[in-house]
Image (tube, helix red, strand yellow):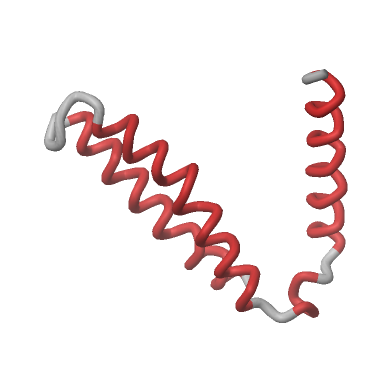
Length: 85
């Protein structure tokens, strides 16, 4: 499972590195780092996470850590929802 998680995050890190390099060396213009970073974290990461999770077996996902993550995610979402009103 660690291999699949790592292979899921490697493309994200690669896109982030390309975005950093584009901004640092002004390859794609002055706003490249912001645009590529926004793309990576708004579109690429959720899509890659969905693909990785959809290809995993349910038994691999039935771990205590996944439950803790899901509960904490829902708690933070609920607090944000309450504070946003």
